[in-house]
Length: 331
Image 1 (tube, rainbow, N blue to C red):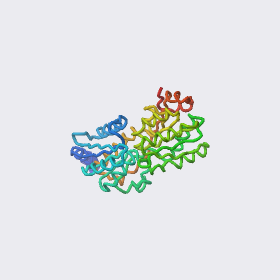
Image 2 (cartoon, rainbow, N blue to C red):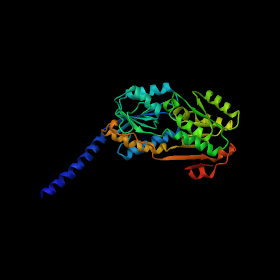
Image 3 (cartoon, rainbow, N blue to C red):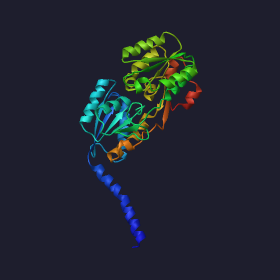
Image 4 (tube, rainbow, N blue to C red):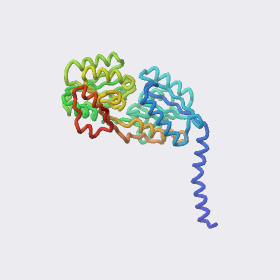
């Protein structure tokens, strides 16, 4: 055997060692916690969680074989979110999945050592989850779902489909929205100035406050709503959609599930795709990598949906420009 052949054989053997080590490591039972920001009966959120599990299975992690998964739900209640975070941290899992800004914040208050990988936190730097997107420098990393400039895009789309809008409510729950609601405000207000629309900051904490806001908007023509993305809005989407229809108020949403449930228009990142990508980061943490060394990832795929039936009910004609761009047209 020549020296070159020996080195080549040694190199190929060395390359195989990590694979063997990974296989052995994956056979050991590991534990994942998952804190979801919505309700346990939400079919869309369960679909995302299922996609995450499929992604893990493709990477060699199977529930009941080498993985145990504990799921908790925070709903739209801050106290329930805190209690669920405490429960998961007490289990001492190897890594915790956090779905959204509020769950990530609740988990961060409970631990600075257990790795946390978030899906859908909007402003991880501003919220203090990571030092920077490139170098998280702590026990948290993950995937952003929407950037702040999206706020202006929502308003632009709303005025494109509802031409007579003169004033727009920016609806959010300050307890659960990114940055207490401030994350998107600058881009929405800048777009409002450009489009000559009056922005009305509309914080809400309950169905009663949502109803009050809708009644006020419905009193005069030319009103619209931008519904921000946060767990409270998702959990309360059915009354929001129903009231918008009752008071004839066009609305745009950041999450496609609103349009599928009867909302007029949605534009945002593909949440299912982000959960699919999330599995790779959780797997890397399970195999020994640290969140501090895994850069925060930006969204790569966006989707628009328009509900033509809702548009007709509101007396609106969906322009061809939106129909051509829409990924999903709901008849």
